[in-house]
Length: 403
Ligand code: UDP
Image 1 (cartoon, helix red, strand yellow):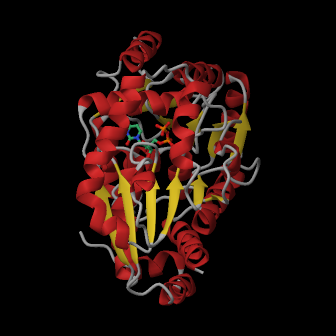
Image 2 (cartoon, protein in one colour):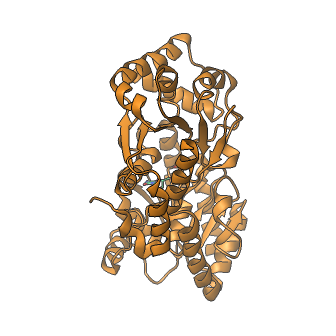
Image 3 (cartoon, rainbow, N blue to C red):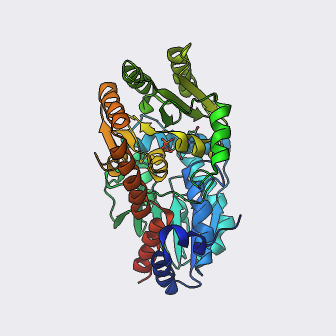
């Protein structure tokens, strides 16, 4: 489906669309090139999927280029990624050379478009060296770091810094994710697409089908956590919390996640969760295929309460998704969850299974407040974390860059 800005008018209102069109006026025909390293899979590709067509729809000459790499290159960039997040991930001299060589090869292909672009947005570390290679650049170059690089593994940062320091600016998702660099830094949090399969409205019949498919009882409350099976998402803590609640109130729990089987750490976590849930008919551990967005959407909509009891988190898009569906979210008091969950307004922040159990019980016994929180939650996301806000911030930044 081709998306157009006007399709969002019914959700965000005509003034928001009008403001975006106004902002885009001074950017007509400007060539903005996004570069990343994958066309699909992962959050960056998901954002570029809507951002590039919507920028084009506003009259900007937006392009999306993807660099090609070898297995060796992607092994090195995975280590860079881990290292930036603070894990000791040593990279050999040969590894850094591969990193540069692959960028040199890609630069040869991309040279004309990069030299001519008015704004270049380089996403994440993989294509970062392109700036150094582009000797005849005409435009401004911005490095868009999507991960938390505030406490990197020093040797990796030492190797990467010379490539990113030369950018005209950088963008991070949260202020706590940034790292000192000798240029202006901007904070642009992520956002969700309210018309995507993950977030669009669903017919009641589709919700019913999903409910039946997983054997969920419409008469008992349901708590849902959608997450990779990862220790930091604390699925065992969620089970413990729900069991505490069940000593006084019936409750069903869905833990939905996917893609764990080819990830050794994920597999071990999934096994532990399965073992903990074994024989308990009210704990549903669902292993979903990748991109099963409508099922996730339906599960979030079937829930009475969304939980995201992470003990470490980036921004926490599952929280955004849950709030957008008008659900109170009980979230771990960490990372971007803190920016989204406000006690008594959009949900509750918790630190322990006991705390989570207390808040689940509280919400289940205060129907009116639960409803009120749900309404506020959706409006909070409409105001702050839909793609139109992210577009506005990008366009504003382009204006500044092009002054
Ligand atoms: N997600 C999914 N399938 C799964 C588990 C998660 O599509 O089995 C989605 C989820 O809906 C959200 C994203 O993956 O859009 C996870 O983003 P988040 O920021 O919550 O956590 P991360 O996995 O990036 O740590």
